[in-house]
Length: 204
Image (tube, rainbow, N blue to C red):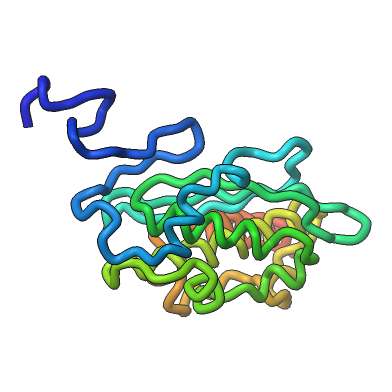
């Protein structure tokens, strides 16, 4: 592609969504294969960005499909554990944007413990139909939700051993984890495990 065929980083003639919080990189087939429900979530900008007072963050994504990633942010009441407000940033295709938006709507109003149970299947249904080769984006969104939940408890001082007993614990044998190349919860769990082993070694 020639430089003159580019405008603002996107090919001329193909509309791309490019904001501070949403960066669309894939537009080969336009909106073909997307349901009205999915496109409505893509167009919904109310939940984009970082809420004021955010105290829990989760991220998931992969470079296998051309750098597809989502960040979820939440303001959690430390007393009730209720997610009072959430927001997202997304990088990739329309399906990733729709999945991220659906995740935010499902998180808000739930306790962190309840949000940890949000599954990829639930988010896929809430998101609506997307092209079959984009269906994995609901799994990334679900991983990011668990990342938010885990991050909240880690900030509260929960130990590695206690984290393993929680429903949002990192399961590196799950399909979601296998598909997700980059996961903030997995990284945090590794850090916690290293710290736990170092403490145990010093006490031995």
